[in-house]
Length: 369
Image (tube, rainbow, N blue to C red; front, side, top):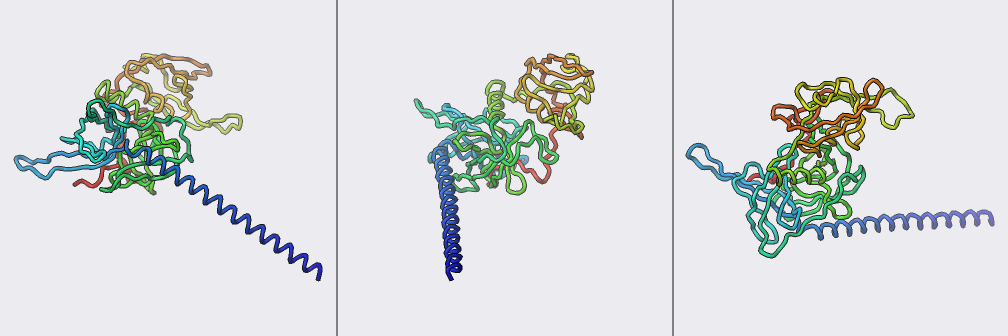
């Protein structure tokens, strides 16, 4: 009887301990969820006044017969105190007129420029005299990694702005047959019509991307803010983006399995086009690319990402491997001819941007009204 009583007491003690652990775990989980809820709410409340609803309208006419104007609605956000707004190029399109809704006002907006390649457009409003516009602090999108929490803000359909919480699922240079100009952030944020062009924020409330495309499985793509910054500076300075041309076709290959080598991939030159900066600089077919300036090259995406941030006229240093010897070549970047493929080549080909496949749709405005 004493033994049985002892066993019963042990079972009771174990059951009580299990209940305490389970209750504590549930309390911790509830506390974490509450903390996340508070953080997201705080990020949204601090950012909402920097996010605007963008309207774009184009008068349709066939011959002498006018039709009802095509009207698109999307999202944008202020990037400085002077009234500059970043949004998606597909929101603006080739509109005859643009305006924003902000703080209960309707304000005319001027289109500074747009870039269909990255789906970015730059607008500007004129702030009231002696006033400035609030704007989002810019984060460093180079610090992003898979698993980071992000918050997208936009105007779904004809509703007020709302946050969408998700996590970064990948940093991609391509989606199916669609090749991006530079690597994009793929996040588990479901974009509704109207949220295209909205900001994507990190856990500190800094903008780290602009929502530019919807992806299958309730995911979206955002152009990293560092890349978007380069585009809007180009639009301000030159009126159009500065896309470079070097005249190289490259491919990537996997090395023989070697446990001592961290990265198993390398990029080699498949073709050097005649009468191009690459030919003048002395590149040869079969050269292996090691570095572009200080950026290591292991995949074709590394080439695109490194060259994306250069401008026409820049002198760029390439480090390559030829016949077992390291060499450095200097190349002066030229303007990409309109007829030439965008970016570089890879297997099967990483060249001209192809029409998006069914898994990628350009983040639209809302329904056309």
